[in-house]
Structure formats: structure tokens, C-alpha cells
Length: 520
Image (cartoon, rainbow, N blue to C red; front, side):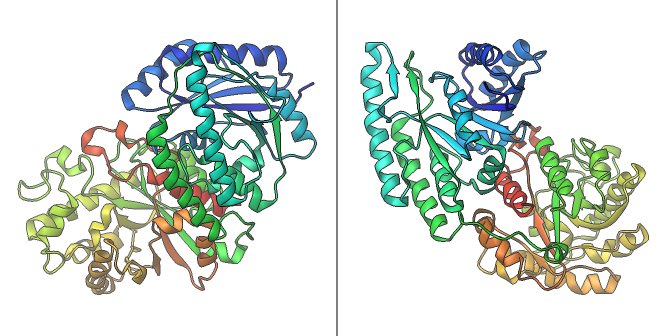
């Protein structure tokens, strides 16, 4: 008899009323057959309009049901990414994944739980075991046969490339311990169809016990969100990516950072307030002790969301993320900015051009407005009871010529006498290297103003993907170093009004999990 508490995550590509009946069926089965606590986390994903419509429909039906957790996932795209963000909404020690069309006999759950009790970390359905069965109308035989053949070919490729022993790596029903699920999502960078392969590579590298269980496949419709042609190309790229990660040792066990090593990592998270998912990611990482400093956007729409919880985190340092390039500026609301200054929010490129790409000071009228806006943003946060200890800026605009000279004395007077210089020579050859040029100019102004700063590291995409390798690099630091990051639990910036949107969205998820990985 089942007695563990269970979270089932359904990655539901927005499908109108289709998912509605499947959730009802799953709840009915669990209420009758599962004797522990349970919840169903429905992670609705897909196109923005479809997600909103499907989520609203499910909310109307299940809003008062304590067993159902609804979650909207927009970015990054893919089944694996949807499961990843849905996992953060779950709470129980057993984690199951089931395809949204519930194509399996749910008796699998009881069999899989027995395997967990016998020491397995991961239990997977296997459609190719001799005792597995398929129930379907004859009209669906052609489509099932095509998928079956392609599945066999895909599995052979996986076994040849990676030495994985399972004869069915893509079955849409699985059960695992919460410990294994946490390890999986801390390493998952394959967000699409091939996320299952990464799961098996992790179990292989970490020595976790995997058990295959026969399933009964109930194929009662021809509907599918999988497009085989396009998925073949994406899967080929994904397998090459996973092969590279395996060769780099990313799925092998690693030692955690020591206490002294962790103390040197002054990880600073930018953009608090830009969206709810950004705030949720930062708060989670701050509570885990990974993030030490959080930079707050004073004019952001979601600044107050979870702010009290952030302020309650022991030892957290808060700073101003001085913003001139996103949303409506505080001085614009009061009409204090000049027409040829900050009367309109300027893009980063506009400001860079105004400085002749860092070769001259910004115009005096623009610097006057910037100084006024800086004071407004600092005092607005301080009036909310936020104790600021430093400032940096959105898109690093404070490094443009003339800004530090203009606001440096104000910063010290306002109690924020620490700032950021982007002096990371590892950026050579990357677009961000321009920031090093700006920082060299700003460095003299920082010294004249008596501001302090830390050595700095700007991790890139490679570090956030090769997470074990990045940890080894961090462990070699010998002095306190600021490390910039922009995490989020999922990408939700497309939900913002146009003037507040930001291009850096789904990639924030990889940053979140790379940082979460440091906490283990």
C-alpha cells in the first residue's frame, strides 16, 4: 500500500479543454489508490495567449482544490524547462513526471514506489519490456508505428553515444526521489525533448540506481504536441551538447565548496523588481546563502513583491541597481527632467553614442538629470526602510564618462559609498569587453570620489552550462570577489508592459540553477 507523499508534475502544453479532463482523471485515481498526501502540479507552457487561456480555464475549475497547483511557464521553451520550473512549486518527497495526455495505466505509480522503497533513486516506464502492453484503436496504428520506429532509432543513437543501458529513454512516466530530482534540475541544460537523456547521464555518472518498470500504454487519440521533423534536428543538436558536457565531466560527483571558499564569493544578483520570477529566484538563492548581495531597481513594477522576505534574510546586503534604461524613471513622473536630458527613457546604445563610445563626458544637461534621478532612486528605497550599502546600475550605465564624477559625492553623502567596476579581463573577445574600457575610465573617478569596489568576475553562458567546471574555477579564488548574476525561476519578462521588457529572459533560468547547484 502506498504511503509516501507524492508530487506529480504535468508539463501541459496549452491545449484548452484537453488537459481539463486529464487532471480530473488523475485526481480521481489518486484519491482512490494513493494513501499518502499528494498534489498535481500543472505546468502550462506554450504560446503566451494559449497559456493565459488554458491557465484561466484550469484556475476556474481547480482554484479551490488543495491538490492542484497551477503554474504558467513561458521561457525557456521545452518540456524539460517546464518540468524544471514546475519542480520549484512542488513540496513532497516523491516526484513523478507524467505526460499531459495520461497515456499510461497509473498502476505504474504503485510499482514504482516499491522500487523506490528497495533503493532506487529513479524509476522509469519502459514500453519495450516484454510484459509492457499497448491499447489503441486500429486507426492509430500507423502513427504509433512511425513513432515506435523513430523511438527505437533514437534510443540506439543514445546507447551508442553515451553507453546508457536503458532500452527506452523517452517514456513519458517516471518516479524519483526528491534528492535525485534536485540533482537533475541543478544539472539540466537540455530544455527540450532530450531532457530524459540528461537524466540518465546524471544517474550513470553519480551511480544512482535506476529501475525500469513495464507499462500499459493507452493510446486513445491522435493528438500530439511533438513535431517529429523539427524535433529530430533539435535532438541532434541536443545530443551533441550532452556529449560535450559528459566529456567535460559534468555528470560526475563533485565536492561542495568549503565555508571559507563560499565566504569569498560575493555573488551579486541584479534586477530585483523587474519581474516576479526574478524576485522569486533571488529570494530562494539568498535564503540558501548563495547570493550575498541584491541590487534593487527603484522604479520597477515588482519592487515590493517578496521585499519583506528578502530584507529578513540574515546577512543579506542590499544596493541600488541604478536604472536609466528600463521603464519610466522617477524624475519623469514628477516632470523634473529636461527635454534634452532624461525626459524620455534612453536606450543603452543612445547613452553610449552620447559619450562617443566612452571617449568624452556625457552632456552637462544629461549629467544634471542623471544626478537628480540617482538621488530620487536612492532616497525612494531608503524611505521604504531599505538599508542600502552600495550601488551599481542596470546595463552598467554608471560607468559612462562623467557619471561617477557627477554622482560620487552624492553617493557617499547618501550612505552608498561602494560601487562596481567591471574589470574582468576574461571578457576579452566578448561584447561585454567594452565595459572594461568604460571601467578603466571610471576607475580614476571612483578613486577621486573615495568610493570602494571589489575585484570582479562576469560569468558567461559557458560557466552557467558547465556548472561543475565553474565551481572548480570559483574554488580557486583567493580574495573576496564580486560575481554578477541575473537569476530567475522561469522566464516571465514577456508579461511586462513594453517599456519595462528586457531581452534577457529565458537564459536567466540557467543562471538560477547554476547558482542553486553551488548550494548543494
